Image: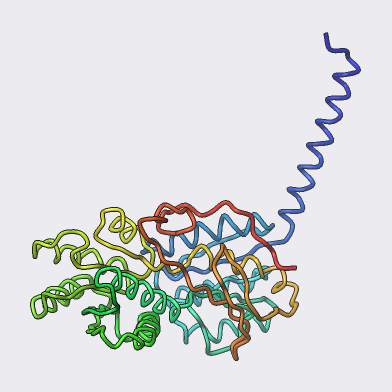
Length: 350
């Protein structure tokens, strides 16, 4: 039989433990509110970014309010005006229009509200931090993977490569092209043919693949700049009687469609746009940004990716390169295409 004194002691310890937990929760909740301004929720990448921000920032003590601009510049500017009036601890901005948003950023910072740019780099005015994908680095990683695949096939790095870009006016795809082609210059026996799918149109990608494979049936590898462009390319390969791996395929944003094609054998590599790491990167530095403490440039480890913080004319910029996804690691939860934000704690920079 348990004595009344023992029960009383256990109740006292339970109450003490509850007080400690409650105090801890209070401390975790007292840092204030962050507003996250989203350009659109029409694609999976933006949905996963919102999920990750709303999961990760509360874990370090911030309440998050997300606002979707539905891809409308006027709506996002109106949202920014309203948010500035609310005086949050900070604004995380994923801009619809990189130029139109500049006056609103200046207004927010003039009101003493730090502005953190996420994903879409704003360079027209100073901001307090940017956390962006290393798009040139994505191209370089894709080149390394292409070289590896060609060498595995032929014993040396040679062959014909078709590169299908996204919209030719989009800096994202142009940076990937730059990194890819610069890295491939060291392989003179590789011939690269490049075409752009205007407006990131999947039907246009299908037409390009169909035409180029008709003109050159010996294409060894196709590199597309987004997974949704890989899907119609695979349809073209199937229509021509190709089997998985006959024409090697690389894509570069890490979407679920690309991971599915890896599992099916059609795609050999998906170079991820590191959405989760971008969220963790800004979370690591957010306390210092809000405290208006200087950020130290240099190398950072973000979800085991080699990020680099540089001081640019528009402010501190954390650039994260992403990683190559293959059949061997496709199920890793750190890749956003698996739609499962990691649960690892944020390593806050002190």
